Amino acid sequence: MAAICVAAACVSWPALSESLYQEGSFRPLTADNKAFRVDDSLTIQVFENSSATTSANTGTRRANDIAGSVTHTGNRVVGTLGIGVSGEFDGGGRTQRTNKLLATLTVTVKDVLPNGELRVAGEQLLTVNDELQKVNLEGRVRPQDISDGNVVLSTRLADARITYVGEGDVSDRARRSAWRKILDWLGL
Image 1 (cartoon, rainbow, N blue to C red):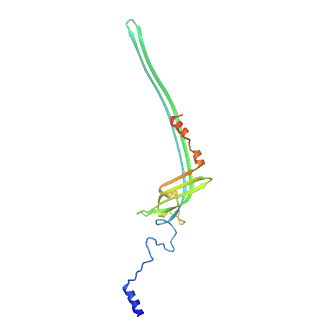
Image 2 (tube, helix red, strand yellow):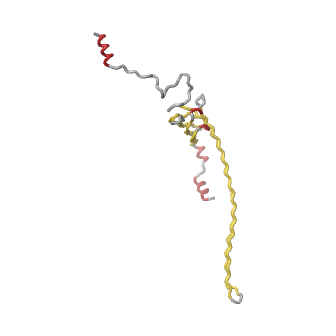
Image 3 (cartoon, rainbow, N blue to C red):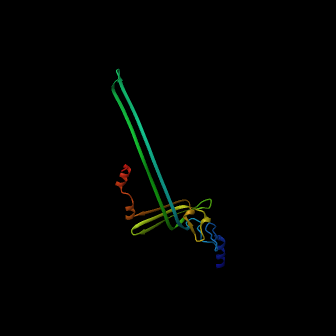
């Protein structure tokens, strides 16, 4: 009787099976550890140098003159009018700025684009001497630019947006005060 119950149970309920292989997440045993899907981690080495120099020189000179006279018969001058305006301006300025940012941070793959590129984004927070340093990074990475160690240089990011912000006493002291900004705006 027990054999009939077991046989009946096997016939009445279909056997369910599911494959262990899933194409979207399959990684062969011999594959490297490069990021290739959403939520994978990727290390970015930020090495950015920038410098810019701007200079301008301006020189203007202007002179205007208006004169007039009224005479009466008998060669006698009744009235004279004269206006003269002149001006001179020499000015110049120079701006020079150099920036260097070195950082290593790990970001996450947010999307795999139709062309195979990876859209990545991440943030790193670091506190040094009560100063909060924040590095935000986002951009697109080509899979062939990822090294065997799962690292990409920031110079290989497309549409890169790298932001480095410091908050605290040192950063506050480095900014110009409001009264200085007003005086600069007034040209003083």
